[in-house]
Figure (spheres, one colour):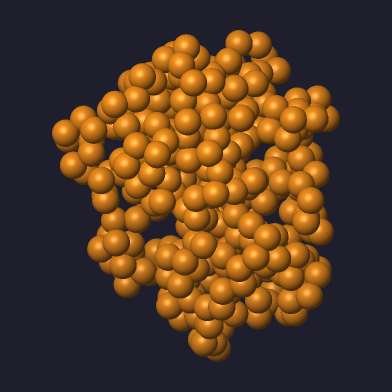
Length: 300
């Protein structure tokens, strides 16, 4: 079984290909478990799902951040999950419609800039609140949009000035927006500039002090988690090794790679061992970094 919320593509992609690389070639069934910003699924995998290697999950990329920040509803310890591997990291950006006064991140410090939010705990609301506190931007989050596609549509309609989405989504599904210069790209939520976004500042560049930069890098670590899979805590070490090996083998499967190529999905995988290190680092971030981030995002 694979339990996941809104990251359907990678969840179902794994369900189609993973079983072929597990001893015995088991059938993998994809099962949605929506609710509480994917905390319902994360809590289930942590406390209820069988600890025998038959259950995996893909949940929000901010899973370790939400735990560190003390977000209500978190009943798991992210570092105690057995992290199996990452399908891809995600490069997210904030865009504004061409009619907005905020055409650069510096403009967003001068003009109030309404942006679409998709719910408390989502990067679409966390990033602008964090930038308001750390970098002095004047983003105004308009919450209640179901997803990033709805946020982009709201910007196109003029309901808001901007929205957050992945660069890959823009590059694949909104090529006309880019080619016709219908949008401005203000910031990319990565630690280093992507080669095809070389002129767009990263979130970390907007920090003025070492603590600012630590806070921004801490929150941006969610993009590095991206579309990752975990299994429940308490699995035997040999079972975890089998699951990670099967995942790594799947990533090299020609049929799997052909499907990735056809979909034009982002594909920046990471091993389970390195992913585990990333999650542990986020969950155990310095207290000052966590408290400063919480102050700006949660207002306390």
